[in-house]
Image (cartoon, rainbow, N blue to C red; front, side, top):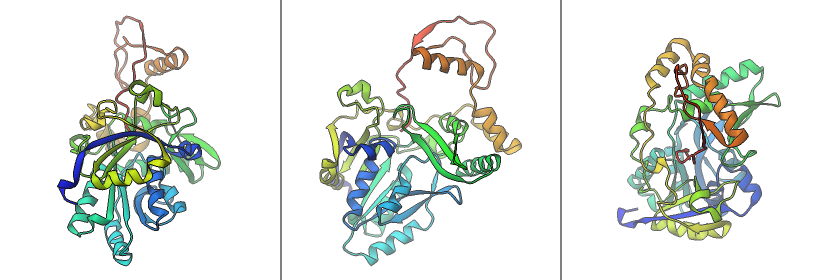
Length: 352
């Protein structure tokens, strides 16, 4: 695939028509619909699958929907490549008339794109990347998962970071152990406060709408403000199409969606403009981790201060919250402050 196959980025808001599929998807069902198209033709899909044995996410090549379903949903951890490059090349050599879909984060997808070009298989591969907040150390999740299993006396049997029971804009993150749901508030808070992200994530060159993959997908955040008539509380996917091959594929699957043409202004989100900024707590976070371990940092960095809890409760009750008690999540309130209420602002910096 040469660069002259790149096209001006074409933007769509889309969600699958199948409501059951929409319900179990992280956003609008983009990944499932795209991968269905490949699997139904006898092609293969490379995607990130979570292992409940090793507590890590690894790229796998799948050729059936049941195996693919294990990859549905957001993974708040870095995926490892394993032997996927070798596996993919062999599969394409053994199946000379088939195509392959690769789905991963921006850095992973662009790495696979370059591999496909080097091996002269680019015309047989559709490369899809996912809008990324950044990837925390996979070791943190493995240790935290072990803590949960030891504490609750059983193995994790189910994991979701974006359950939609309270709506797409308020995802619920839980695991199930011995049939009991265990919330993942501590881990999710650390994920979003950026303490655990890799240093390279703060210099990511893929935080842009212009990419060399075929298609970029993610959540169409704040669509209720920019395209309110198309908003759905169960979620909407964002498609950014970069190549002729990507556009041709979207044309082949668009009947599976309710979709609407958009633009790069209406779909704006921070992860399409610049990398995530480095947390000012990052160095102390890792120092605390090395000195005191996983349980200590989960307590210190994964819990809200009393002041933050009060704000959140007021927000849930009335849609307002206190703003003038200026503290960080790890400090004490300042001695002087004024109290006032303001309308909750739109959460434009929500990661996809």
